[in-house]
Length: 209
Ligand code: NI
Image (tube, rainbow, N blue to C red):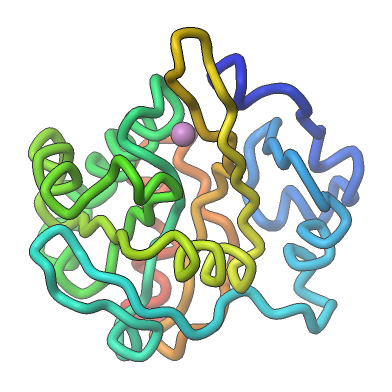
C-alpha cells in the first residue's frame, strides 16, 4: 500500500462479519476509502446491489472493450494506474502468476486492468507498462468521464491526490473482481495466497463440477 492509498483501511471481516468475509476468501485487509457501507453491501451475496454496468473503453491495442464484449468468458477486473508505486504492480504481478498457473485456460478468461488515470495512461503508456506482465492482461483507458461512469457502476472509488512538485498520485479501490461468463459478480479474488489457490475460483467457473 502506498501512503496515499492507505489513509483509511477497514478490517473488512470485522465490519462485515467474519463468516461472510471468510467465505469470500478475503485477506486480512481490504482498504476502501469511501462509501464502505455500499461496498460491504455489494460484497454481501445476500443483497441485491449490483457490481458492474455498461462501459466502453479501449485497450492497449486500440480495440474497443465494452461490458458486452466481455460476455462469454469469466472476467477478472481491477482498477489502478501505471504510476502506482506498489499496489498495482504487485497485483499485476500476482495475477500474472495466476495466469501462468492457468496455462491454456488463461485464454478462456478476460483479465482487465482499468486505468483510473487516463490522463497519463494513454493506450501507448499502457502497452508499454504491460510489457512487464503476463500477455493475457489487457489494460483499458478512455475519456475520464467514461472511466468515472464505469467506476461508479463497479463501485470503485478513485481520487487524484496532489504531490509535491506538481506531480500527483491516485487513491483507488484495490479490490480484484471476479465475474462469471454472464457478467455477474462472483466474489473478490484473493491474490494474497499461492497462485494455485488464487486460481481455484477461476477454474471453478471454467469447469463447474
Ligand atoms: Ni494502485
